Length: 102
Length: 181
Length: 94
Image (cartoon, rainbow over all chains, first blue to last red; front, side, top):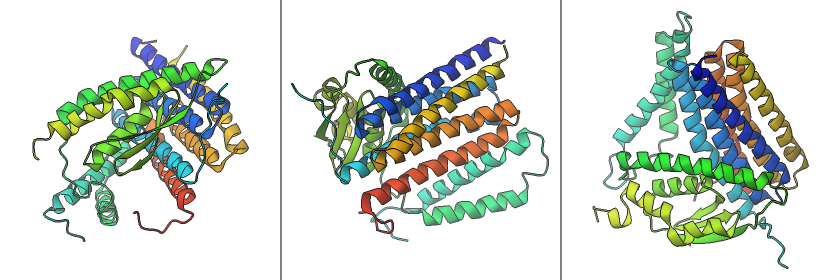
């Protein structure tokens, strides 16, 4: 394997790790607002890392430009979508979960 | 078309039109890349021009609708790299909290005000807050931000230090960096 | 080991994480959880499609589909969020 491909594989697997962690968080965390943390952040970074890995697989082509646009778009759109759902929940009066005080 | 007071909207529309058309050309380019002749011809260009014109007409008030933008692109570059570093920190933090058996979280809702004037600055701040560790923007109303934080320690940088707000002020020429007012 | 095999393993792991998200999409408990889970699934699908494209050795076509899918997923999430917030869609933005 070429050295560039090794770097590419490392990026892709880093992104995969964060995506699986985000899914586990989506299942484990106690309420909707806490789950938003697991939904918004790991997905964004996972997407960027995987797409970066794919760019490094074939660095000099139109594909790289398109993949760069894909990752840039996700970087802008994912927090916005998270924010939209959070705002809808907040305006409809969903109460955040608090830790029980002893 | 509504005329904004003292603001010429035509250059912005032209800019948006060429942006969309460039994106169309980019999307049509895969045919050139993979040796399928005849895919990128005059018909595709005309289609792209018509589609871009329709989209620009329909969305003329939606994005970049004539607000004066004082953004410094050279100052934005270090900010973006700082933000990417913050994203990595945020994800390591989320991974730690999610995979820890006891899940050390104590969520709370905080509220603060920003002195920004531009909509673009608020958009950048809201998205940056969502991407930095332990905080999610829930609601933006005027200058009021409501933020959900996973832990008390994440709320303090936004409430007390206000590092991110100051960095964005630097990028967008607001507050103490504003030279126009 | 070829790098395409590694890409395939990564794609399988992303697919497993999509299955984990489906649990949240089915079990709720609120409707916002379901919307969020579907949005996350859409993002992950937009990542899987280029990987499949590289495996099938026609990445150009698949990346176009992925871009369109990401756009549609974003717009769809926004529309559903707006509907849940107001109960209707054709009101001017205040």
